[in-house]
Length: 175
Image (cartoon, rainbow, N blue to C red; front, side, top):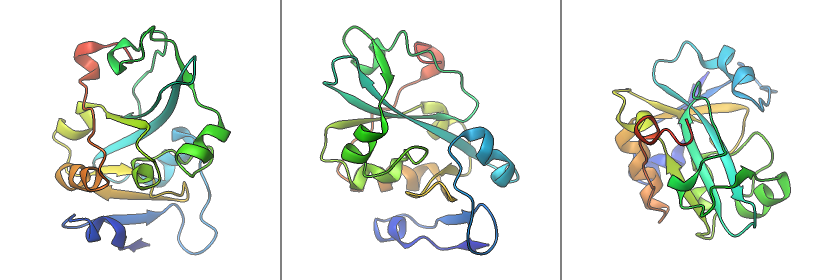
């Protein structure tokens, strides 16, 4: 069931785990966190959800990673530098263009595909909440990958995308 994912290891991560959502071939694609959790709830760590957002005028894009059970309010997003704070979910066409993945597959792994016009914003609770592992999709929603928070940051920085780490509890604009 577990298999090594080489990509993070090649970028300096000490270890990673990858779990197919179902043993064998044909693992189900999951589009929502609710669909994913039955497959991974036994794993201890920070389970994430990833939101691909755009501002109303389509001038900026953000990939926001938060704990899977965080409630999100897009009406007040000034802390992301979105000017008026008028954010909405980006459509699948924008996901395919900017992240090279479709609906349900927004993930920090897409940092390799982005040309630098998508800001990556992880919630500090994911990285600094005392979790042993951070779990997210490895470019496919048929699997989940786990890295230590330190290795996760190393992985992201090696893609030449500095994350904008925000404390969503403190700022409470998106949470």
